[in-house]
Length: 160
Ligand SMILES: CC(C)(COP(=O)(O)OP(=O)(O)OC[C@H]1O[C@@H](n2cnc3c(N)ncnc32)[C@H](O)[C@@H]1OP(=O)(O)O)[C@@H](O)C(=O)NCCC(=O)NCCS
Image (cartoon, helix red, strand yellow):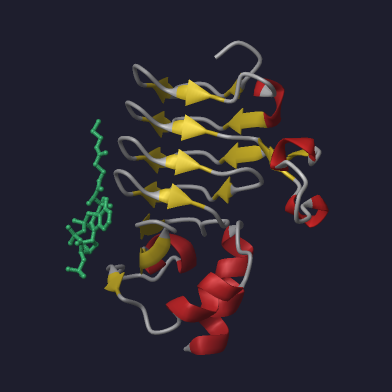
């Protein structure tokens, strides 16, 4: 994990595989759990340069940062792709491939990872709380790039 910025209280499981070519692009907040076998990739080929007859290896590498915000939990064997921000308190299912930003206090699973739950009580501070499974506006969350609680509150209030 040399070069990775890691906040206080975070735990990194065995066999976590970080991008050795750009560890400085990875930022892990406080109290994050990165469980066993997670991979974090910060680079890929620029396919805008790909042409018929040209080896893909000739395309330049594009580097993008990964940010995992405070309190997030990354399930076993998940793959985090370049440029992804995982919001505060978000939970990523085992074996998921995370290609887009994940909103705070949500659960995202699958390949590509999709949000299946949002812990609205945590986000908007409802007095009685509760978890809304398959929240009706999840499709809106997927389309937007939401990484802060403020953004999520905005979408929630518009939808309710
Ligand atoms: C993501 C997770 C937290 C969801 O748990 P949950 O809220 O109890 O969700 P459920 O088991 O009710 O599953 C909800 C749906 O998501 C699907 N799902 C759950 N986990 C999934 C995963 N990892 N990948 C793909 N789909 C998943 C279920 O099949 C179910 O789909 P359905 O509604 O179509 O039937 C859990 O399944 C998980 O993967 N936890 C990580 C475990 C781990 O890595 N632990 C590390 C130990 S240190």
